[in-house]
Length: 72
Image (cartoon, rainbow, N blue to C red):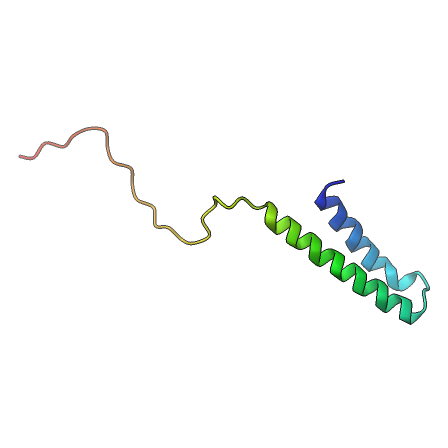
């Protein structure tokens, strides 16, 4: 099961949890566990991002031309 699927199931669980009829104390515990689970999934997804992508702005420089310009 992919991380994306787990995130969707966790979101659906959190959305449906108030309507399942559990006592309030159980709801609090389940919301806490679901929150920790979603947080951990967020960290796992964040670590999948490749590190080679620069995260800062780099000004683009035009590539050097192949033809030599003669000085007159």
